[in-house]
Image 1 (tube, rainbow, N blue to C red):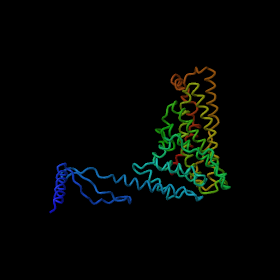
Image 2 (image 1 turned 135 degrees about the vertical axis):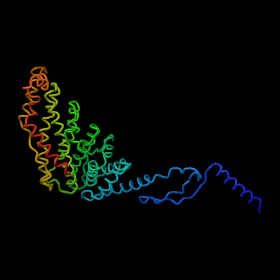
Image 3 (image 1 turned 90 degrees about the vertical axis):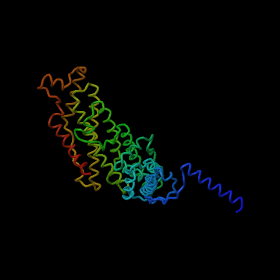
Image 4 (image 1 turned 60 degrees about the vertical axis):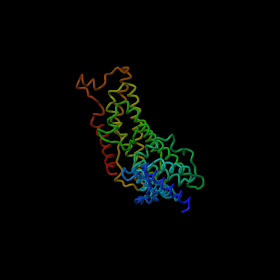
Length: 383
């Protein structure tokens, strides 16, 4: 055997011995089945036979990559330039994606955000409807991520001049994007989606103290204003995209108003134990609540005319005028006495013949709130 061949073989044997002494060796293992259609992985390098094998590759990571690709396709499919509402199958795929464990919502939010930078009203409107759908039906991580962004949609100057319909639809896009911005901001300020919080006596709005109510109710009012400002008439809902937006807004309006009602009821329960400045602020909030109740009734009339089942539309009534007058009279008494009146709860303790809360405990006012809240709950529990 030639001398250089013998030397080469000797070096190979020495290298193998060194590897065994180091406790390492290389094996080519058959890769296990890969979920989600991912490509097969390269051969594994493992410890020697008498040691516990190291951690295997994360198949969840492979699935995530595949799901990320699927979500991108679904997002693009939901925001095509066809003037129809986003297809249900694409929305369902996106919901499945963001509801999956450890699935990144940032990537999906980036894709949809990029779509809102299109010059086409169709693409932008469909992207907004898709975002809203995911806010309402998706995992809370999605709206949580949107709320963490410094800015969401900057469409206050959006205008599509390329087609005649673009002028009218651009106005609704500007209003709709403002509502989604306010919904996201409200989540940041309240640290929850107020439309999904627990309701009833032990719910979030019924257990807040006075300070929390005075901070939270104006946030709800601002969001509610942005929703009602969509302000579409039946003859303006001329295509599937704007109709889809209106339907989601309709659902949001009832859930938001239910929370709003509960907060106002809690506020009025505390009203006659407040100081003068708190009473002033609370009265202003209550007057705005009455104005928004009137606007919501008009909003629901539009819903009746655009094909929403009338059985799904609660019949809301106006608050009795006597309640507002009593609140004003109490504030006037505080101002006249320079905030020197004892709280009604203390007056009641000293003299039980004085009512603990002369308005909200009255049957007419209590019955009005109870009736509206019950009708709202009936809708929410069935949807």
